[in-house]
Image (tube, rainbow, N blue to C red; front, side, top):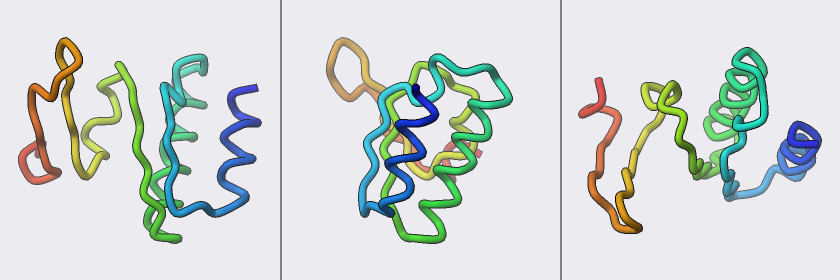
Length: 83
């Protein structure tokens, strides 16, 4: 179901995608494929993708990171500061 929902969202080529734990129910390989697809769509179609996740494996591939703690912004990072 999760993959179908993501595919439907991508087909419409929206300007903004809000993804709440898009890889949470997926195995590692499929999760990486979904994340890569979102990155490619962001680059190719100038789509803004906001991902909420606890999975820090994808941080290195993010342009901007907000870390929340107790419902408040605790840290802000850009791609340059993550590298």
